[in-house]
Image (cartoon, rainbow, N blue to C red; front, top):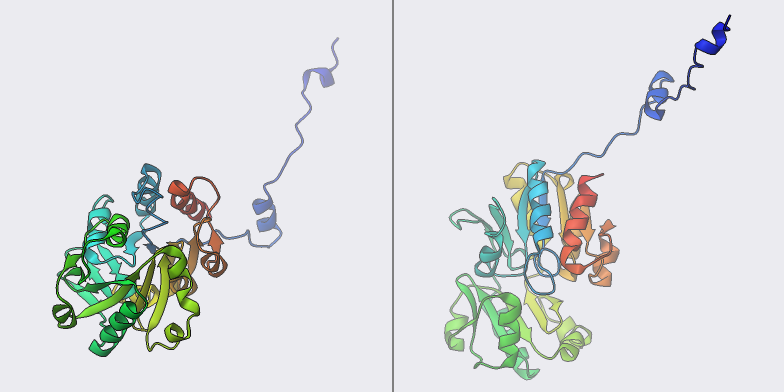
Length: 298
Protein backbone atom coordinates (compact mmCIF):
# COMPACT_ATOMS: atom_id res chain seq x y z
CA UNK A 1 0.00 0.00 0.00
CA UNK A 2 1.18 3.47 -0.91
CA UNK A 3 1.34 5.89 2.00
CA UNK A 4 -1.29 8.64 1.89
CA UNK A 5 1.33 11.27 2.64
CA UNK A 6 2.92 10.53 -0.74
CA UNK A 7 -0.37 11.11 -2.58
CA UNK A 8 -1.23 14.45 -0.89
CA UNK A 9 0.97 17.31 -2.05
CA UNK A 10 2.47 19.57 0.57
CA UNK A 11 0.58 22.94 0.57
CA UNK A 12 2.76 25.80 -0.73
CA UNK A 13 4.00 28.39 1.73
CA UNK A 14 1.42 31.19 1.96
CA UNK A 15 2.47 34.77 1.27
CA UNK A 16 0.52 37.85 2.16
CA UNK A 17 0.48 41.11 0.23
CA UNK A 18 2.03 43.80 2.49
CA UNK A 19 -0.99 46.07 1.98
CA UNK A 20 -3.39 43.27 3.00
CA UNK A 21 -1.22 42.42 5.99
CA UNK A 22 -1.21 46.06 7.04
CA UNK A 23 -5.00 46.17 6.77
CA UNK A 24 -5.50 43.19 9.13
CA UNK A 25 -3.02 44.72 11.56
CA UNK A 26 -5.06 47.89 11.66
CA UNK A 27 -2.55 49.95 9.65
CA UNK A 28 -3.44 51.79 6.45
CA UNK A 29 -1.74 50.94 3.14
CA UNK A 30 0.23 53.74 1.50
CA UNK A 31 -2.13 55.87 -0.62
CA UNK A 32 -1.44 56.65 -4.24
CA UNK A 33 -1.08 60.39 -4.85
CA UNK A 34 -4.06 61.98 -6.57
CA UNK A 35 -3.33 63.37 -10.02
CA UNK A 36 -3.93 67.02 -10.77
CA UNK A 37 -6.68 68.42 -12.94
CA UNK A 38 -4.70 70.95 -14.97
CA UNK A 39 -1.33 70.48 -16.71
CA UNK A 40 0.61 73.58 -17.75
CA UNK A 41 3.14 72.85 -20.49
CA UNK A 42 5.88 75.18 -21.70
CA UNK A 43 6.75 75.16 -25.40
CA UNK A 44 10.41 75.85 -26.24
CA UNK A 45 12.63 73.20 -24.70
CA UNK A 46 9.67 71.29 -23.27
CA UNK A 47 6.90 70.36 -25.71
CA UNK A 48 9.20 71.40 -28.56
CA UNK A 49 12.48 69.62 -29.17
CA UNK A 50 15.79 70.99 -30.45
CA UNK A 51 14.21 71.29 -33.93
CA UNK A 52 11.48 73.56 -32.48
CA UNK A 53 8.80 70.95 -33.24
CA UNK A 54 6.77 68.68 -30.96
CA UNK A 55 8.00 65.11 -31.21
CA UNK A 56 5.51 62.26 -31.79
CA UNK A 57 6.41 60.96 -28.32
CA UNK A 58 5.50 64.27 -26.68
CA UNK A 59 2.25 64.59 -28.63
CA UNK A 60 1.24 61.07 -27.59
CA UNK A 61 2.15 61.76 -23.95
CA UNK A 62 -0.01 64.90 -23.88
CA UNK A 63 -2.89 62.77 -25.18
CA UNK A 64 -2.32 60.35 -22.27
CA UNK A 65 -2.72 63.24 -19.83
CA UNK A 66 -6.01 64.14 -21.45
CA UNK A 67 -7.18 60.54 -21.40
CA UNK A 68 -6.77 60.64 -17.63
CA UNK A 69 -9.13 63.63 -17.47
CA UNK A 70 -6.41 66.30 -17.09
CA UNK A 71 -6.96 69.60 -18.89
CA UNK A 72 -3.88 70.78 -20.81
CA UNK A 73 -2.92 74.46 -21.09
CA UNK A 74 0.02 75.89 -23.00
CA UNK A 75 2.12 78.28 -20.86
CA UNK A 76 4.69 80.08 -22.99
CA UNK A 77 6.60 83.29 -23.51
CA UNK A 78 5.42 83.24 -27.10
CA UNK A 79 2.70 85.50 -28.44
CA UNK A 80 -0.75 84.00 -29.07
CA UNK A 81 -0.06 84.00 -32.82
CA UNK A 82 3.02 81.82 -32.34
CA UNK A 83 1.32 79.46 -29.88
CA UNK A 84 -1.80 78.67 -31.89
CA UNK A 85 -0.12 76.81 -34.80
CA UNK A 86 1.58 74.49 -32.30
CA UNK A 87 -1.36 74.00 -29.97
CA UNK A 88 -3.57 72.95 -32.87
CA UNK A 89 -1.27 69.95 -33.40
CA UNK A 90 -2.56 68.68 -30.04
CA UNK A 91 -6.08 67.54 -29.31
CA UNK A 92 -8.48 69.84 -27.44
CA UNK A 93 -6.12 72.41 -25.95
CA UNK A 94 -8.52 75.24 -25.14
CA UNK A 95 -6.47 77.64 -23.01
CA UNK A 96 -3.19 79.51 -23.52
CA UNK A 97 -1.07 81.47 -21.06
CA UNK A 98 0.77 83.72 -23.53
CA UNK A 99 3.62 86.23 -23.42
CA UNK A 100 4.94 84.95 -20.05
CA UNK A 101 1.46 85.38 -18.55
CA UNK A 102 0.62 88.84 -19.88
CA UNK A 103 -2.34 87.33 -21.73
CA UNK A 104 -4.55 84.45 -20.56
CA UNK A 105 -7.00 83.48 -23.23
CA UNK A 106 -9.22 80.80 -24.68
CA UNK A 107 -7.96 79.33 -27.95
CA UNK A 108 -10.72 81.18 -29.80
CA UNK A 109 -9.45 84.44 -28.29
CA UNK A 110 -13.03 85.49 -27.68
CA UNK A 111 -12.78 84.79 -23.95
CA UNK A 112 -9.77 86.66 -22.57
CA UNK A 113 -9.24 86.37 -18.80
CA UNK A 114 -6.18 88.60 -18.48
CA UNK A 115 -4.18 91.21 -20.35
CA UNK A 116 -1.37 93.14 -18.69
CA UNK A 117 0.51 95.90 -20.48
CA UNK A 118 3.71 97.84 -19.96
CA UNK A 119 3.43 101.59 -19.40
CA UNK A 120 4.40 103.78 -22.34
CA UNK A 121 7.25 105.21 -20.26
CA UNK A 122 8.65 101.74 -19.60
CA UNK A 123 8.38 100.81 -23.29
CA UNK A 124 10.25 103.97 -24.29
CA UNK A 125 12.90 103.30 -21.66
CA UNK A 126 13.37 99.68 -22.78
CA UNK A 127 13.65 100.65 -26.45
CA UNK A 128 16.09 103.48 -25.73
CA UNK A 129 18.28 101.22 -23.60
CA UNK A 130 18.24 98.56 -26.29
CA UNK A 131 19.51 101.15 -28.74
CA UNK A 132 22.18 102.25 -26.28
CA UNK A 133 23.37 98.67 -25.84
CA UNK A 134 23.46 98.06 -29.57
CA UNK A 135 20.73 95.40 -29.43
CA UNK A 136 17.75 94.82 -31.70
CA UNK A 137 14.37 95.37 -30.05
CA UNK A 138 11.18 93.50 -30.78
CA UNK A 139 7.88 94.30 -29.11
CA UNK A 140 4.95 92.02 -28.37
CA UNK A 141 1.69 93.92 -28.77
CA UNK A 142 -1.88 92.62 -28.70
CA UNK A 143 -1.86 92.04 -32.46
CA UNK A 144 1.50 90.28 -32.74
CA UNK A 145 5.27 90.92 -32.62
CA UNK A 146 6.59 94.13 -34.19
CA UNK A 147 9.92 95.89 -34.67
CA UNK A 148 11.32 99.03 -36.26
CA UNK A 149 14.59 97.26 -37.11
CA UNK A 150 15.45 96.40 -40.74
CA UNK A 151 15.83 92.76 -41.74
CA UNK A 152 19.04 91.22 -40.40
CA UNK A 153 20.43 87.87 -39.17
CA UNK A 154 19.40 88.55 -35.56
CA UNK A 155 15.77 89.04 -36.57
CA UNK A 156 15.98 85.87 -38.63
CA UNK A 157 17.27 84.06 -35.51
CA UNK A 158 14.21 85.20 -33.54
CA UNK A 159 11.81 84.30 -36.35
CA UNK A 160 13.33 80.83 -36.64
CA UNK A 161 12.87 80.16 -32.92
CA UNK A 162 9.48 81.82 -32.72
CA UNK A 163 8.09 80.24 -35.86
CA UNK A 164 6.50 83.58 -36.75
CA UNK A 165 8.03 86.67 -38.35
CA UNK A 166 7.89 90.09 -36.71
CA UNK A 167 6.10 92.90 -38.52
CA UNK A 168 8.09 96.04 -39.31
CA UNK A 169 6.43 99.33 -38.31
CA UNK A 170 7.79 102.77 -37.31
CA UNK A 171 8.70 103.31 -33.65
CA UNK A 172 6.06 106.02 -33.27
CA UNK A 173 3.41 103.43 -34.14
CA UNK A 174 4.94 100.93 -31.72
CA UNK A 175 4.61 103.45 -28.89
CA UNK A 176 0.94 103.91 -29.73
CA UNK A 177 0.25 100.19 -29.22
CA UNK A 178 -0.56 98.30 -26.03
CA UNK A 179 2.65 96.41 -25.27
CA UNK A 180 3.01 93.11 -23.42
CA UNK A 181 6.81 93.00 -23.37
CA UNK A 182 10.01 94.13 -25.08
CA UNK A 183 12.57 91.63 -26.34
CA UNK A 184 16.24 92.37 -27.00
CA UNK A 185 18.03 90.23 -29.57
CA UNK A 186 21.81 89.92 -29.74
CA UNK A 187 24.82 87.64 -29.73
CA UNK A 188 24.40 84.97 -27.02
CA UNK A 189 27.52 85.97 -25.07
CA UNK A 190 26.39 89.59 -25.02
CA UNK A 191 22.87 88.67 -23.92
CA UNK A 192 24.18 86.38 -21.17
CA UNK A 193 26.02 89.24 -19.49
CA UNK A 194 23.12 91.69 -19.43
CA UNK A 195 21.67 90.54 -16.12
CA UNK A 196 24.81 91.64 -14.30
CA UNK A 197 24.76 95.23 -15.58
CA UNK A 198 23.70 97.81 -13.00
CA UNK A 199 21.59 99.68 -15.54
CA UNK A 200 19.58 96.50 -16.11
CA UNK A 201 19.14 95.52 -12.47
CA UNK A 202 17.92 99.04 -11.68
CA UNK A 203 15.18 99.02 -14.33
CA UNK A 204 11.62 99.41 -12.97
CA UNK A 205 10.56 96.21 -14.69
CA UNK A 206 11.23 92.48 -14.74
CA UNK A 207 14.21 91.28 -16.81
CA UNK A 208 14.54 87.67 -18.01
CA UNK A 209 17.15 85.83 -20.09
CA UNK A 210 14.88 83.38 -21.91
CA UNK A 211 16.84 82.07 -24.92
CA UNK A 212 20.54 82.08 -25.80
CA UNK A 213 20.21 85.30 -27.77
CA UNK A 214 17.04 86.76 -26.27
CA UNK A 215 16.47 88.97 -23.23
CA UNK A 216 12.97 90.09 -22.20
CA UNK A 217 11.53 93.04 -20.24
CA UNK A 218 8.00 93.15 -18.83
CA UNK A 219 6.01 94.24 -15.74
CA UNK A 220 6.94 92.54 -12.47
CA UNK A 221 3.38 91.22 -12.16
CA UNK A 222 3.66 89.26 -15.42
CA UNK A 223 4.59 85.63 -14.71
CA UNK A 224 3.34 82.27 -15.84
CA UNK A 225 2.38 81.59 -12.23
CA UNK A 226 0.08 84.62 -12.09
CA UNK A 227 -1.43 83.72 -15.44
CA UNK A 228 -2.06 80.13 -14.36
CA UNK A 229 -3.54 81.32 -11.06
CA UNK A 230 -6.00 83.47 -13.00
CA UNK A 231 -6.97 80.54 -15.21
CA UNK A 232 -7.21 78.09 -12.30
CA UNK A 233 -9.57 80.43 -10.47
CA UNK A 234 -11.74 80.68 -13.59
CA UNK A 235 -11.88 76.86 -13.77
CA UNK A 236 -12.60 76.49 -10.05
CA UNK A 237 -9.20 74.98 -9.28
CA UNK A 238 -6.31 75.75 -6.94
CA UNK A 239 -2.53 75.48 -7.14
CA UNK A 240 -2.64 71.94 -5.71
CA UNK A 241 -4.66 70.86 -8.77
CA UNK A 242 -1.92 71.95 -11.19
CA UNK A 243 1.17 70.20 -12.52
CA UNK A 244 3.68 72.31 -14.47
CA UNK A 245 6.26 71.17 -17.04
CA UNK A 246 9.05 73.49 -18.22
CA UNK A 247 12.77 74.02 -18.64
CA UNK A 248 13.70 77.69 -18.25
CA UNK A 249 14.09 80.46 -15.71
CA UNK A 250 10.77 81.89 -16.89
CA UNK A 251 9.16 78.66 -15.59
CA UNK A 252 10.48 79.02 -12.03
CA UNK A 253 7.51 81.01 -10.75
CA UNK A 254 5.01 78.41 -11.97
CA UNK A 255 7.19 75.58 -10.64
CA UNK A 256 7.00 77.12 -7.17
CA UNK A 257 3.28 77.89 -7.42
CA UNK A 258 1.98 74.59 -8.82
CA UNK A 259 1.25 71.59 -6.63
CA UNK A 260 3.59 69.46 -8.76
CA UNK A 261 6.31 70.48 -11.20
CA UNK A 262 8.79 68.83 -13.55
CA UNK A 263 11.85 70.48 -15.08
CA UNK A 264 13.29 68.93 -18.22
CA UNK A 265 16.64 67.33 -17.36
CA UNK A 266 18.41 69.50 -19.96
CA UNK A 267 16.92 72.75 -18.61
CA UNK A 268 18.48 75.77 -16.93
CA UNK A 269 20.19 74.91 -13.60
CA UNK A 270 17.99 77.40 -11.74
CA UNK A 271 14.88 75.78 -13.20
CA UNK A 272 16.08 72.33 -12.15
CA UNK A 273 16.66 73.61 -8.63
CA UNK A 274 13.19 75.16 -8.43
CA UNK A 275 11.17 72.22 -9.79
CA UNK A 276 9.90 69.55 -7.43
CA UNK A 277 10.96 66.78 -9.84
CA UNK A 278 13.19 66.38 -12.91
CA UNK A 279 12.39 64.40 -16.05
CA UNK A 280 14.30 61.17 -16.62
CA UNK A 281 17.32 61.67 -18.86
CA UNK A 282 17.37 60.65 -22.52
CA UNK A 283 16.85 62.45 -25.80
CA UNK A 284 15.75 66.07 -25.19
CA UNK A 285 13.02 65.81 -27.85
CA UNK A 286 11.09 63.28 -25.73
CA UNK A 287 11.95 64.54 -22.24
CA UNK A 288 8.40 65.82 -21.73
CA UNK A 289 6.96 62.41 -22.61
CA UNK A 290 9.14 60.75 -19.96
CA UNK A 291 8.16 63.38 -17.39
CA UNK A 292 4.46 62.91 -18.13
CA UNK A 293 4.73 59.13 -17.87
CA UNK A 294 6.58 59.50 -14.58
CA UNK A 295 3.81 61.75 -13.30
CA UNK A 296 0.99 59.44 -14.45
CA UNK A 297 2.71 56.43 -12.87
CA UNK A 298 2.87 57.97 -9.39
